[in-house]
Image (cartoon, rainbow, N blue to C red; front, side, top):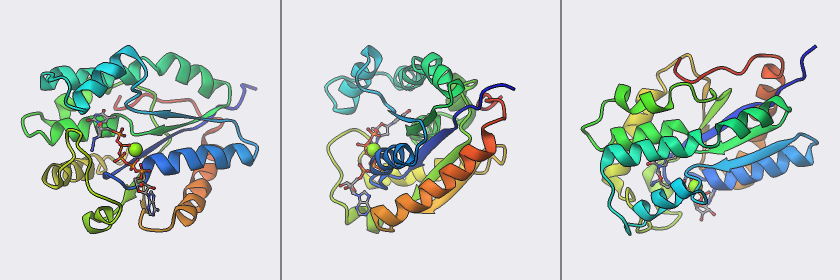
Length: 212
Ligand code: Z5A
Ligand code: MG
């Protein structure tokens, strides 16, 4: 019998919903429960491509919109060989943002249709679970002001949210919305329980390809 594989779990959601907090907490919680788990944060600003993306986000560099979209996607593809290796070794991978952020942010710019935005990410490892951390703009505002990075404005974030809602209509993907206004610990417990159920369900199933 083939070895059991790990699950690919994506965290998505609006700005300041707690994706990075919950990503770290989930990997910590899964490891404490005896599972093998790793975290990848996208964009991964540590690679050469990631450094270019970072200089764009902090407004040190201007990049053409198609170009930056393809760079975000390339930043995911450069992780794919290792992600696949780990998943097949039984390691669960939690990704803090994934292709859905890629599509939602570029689509929100207005002149890029969803279909074009999805193409560069077609064939990436398909997440077994996408957790959407839902938080109202009012509740997000209580977590501090927007920073100074590109995209950090309420009008743009509202467009991003609408693009996420379009992506969530795809029933071939396992989207689950969670209430991100709960305390960090309550939300963690809910997320960990959903994650463990998914890990159990997919361990003997083949890893699929996104949007294929
Ligand atoms: N982007 C893109 O355009 N294309 C792509 O393909 C990808 C990304 C992958 C940088 O992403 C930008 O890149 C982003 C999308 C775009 N632009 N924007 N906006 P990033 O992931 O590096 O962004 P970030 O800096 O991590 O922000 P974030 O993801 O929006 O935040 P978060 O991870 O959701 O939240 P957090 O850092 O965990 O928490 C925010 C604060 O709230 C912090 O003070 C926490 O302590 C607090 N917090 C968290 N949870 C709670 C609860 N439950 N209660 C109270 N307070 C809480
Ligand atoms: Mg984050």
